[in-house]
Image (cartoon, rainbow, N blue to C red; front, top):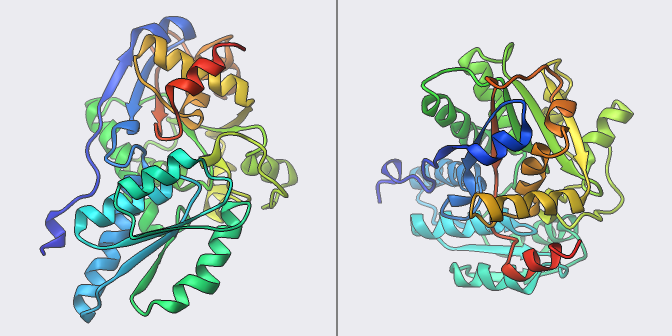
Amino acid sequence: MTVDRIQPWISTPLVESAHLSKLAGCSRIFLKLENLQPSGSFKSRGIGNYLLCRIRECDASGKQPHFYASSGGNAGIACVVAARSLGYPASVVVPTTTSPALVARLREEGAHNVYQHGQSVMDADKYLRSTILPRDDNGIYVPPFDHPDVWDGNATVMNEIAAQLSYEQPDLVVCSVGGGGLMNGIMQSLDDLKWSDKTSVLAMETDGADSLDQALKAKQLVKLDKITSRARSLGVATVSAKTFEYAQRPQVSNAVLSDAQAARGCLLMARHERLMVELTAGVAAALCEDGQLQRFSGRRLDRDSKVVLLICGGNDISVDMLMEWQKY
């Protein structure tokens, strides 16, 4: 197998949204549709790149890897989809609180095994490291966000955005933050493009999964006692140290919205863009209402400003969920 010729992610569309631009009233809104990745989220990029790096190492040593990830959803799906596309097995440990639909999705995608353990992703991760990995000499741990190879893969999304905008520099990029792997990749790419001084970044979280916001307020990394947000893919107790470092740059701002506001963003995407996306993506779209984009952006925007919303995933969503949210 010539691994160098295989890429377990795709180039996704960047589309301008006339409706969201009109709704925001202060800028041109572009949607980077990472929900269209093979795994349904941007994690195809970072985790896919991480797997490619480890496979090259294993090719050199003659090892046949079996990949293992702990996840509340998107990271595990990305690991399984990427590994299977490359011809290798992957297993995932998820918390017992993971929805049956996501567990079924992991199995449908071809997971070698799906283990359920603990009440949180942290519990699942500890079980993976302490109990499952030691049993497999070919086992390779797959970090969900905190590794330079993951960041390198995620950086490709900003490189694509730059090319799709014909290298006209965007004024603002909005991304969701769980552990921070996506933001790290974006910041890394902005530095490489020498755009860091003029392109602002707005980091979005939901209330109850706001480890970055809590860290910035405390002026040090903090660990959330419990994740209470329904945006499960944002449910990381502590952001990476690199994310905390990036978040203190003057061109970076952050905001925390409620799950209800994120759900409203999902409804906007369904009604006006005809796309079903999860709360992690809805929290970015929700900024287009009630003047929130201007309020949280950290800069002055006008109708010619180019704002890119990272629509990061579309796995943890269903018609039933959207119907339920319409009641509120």
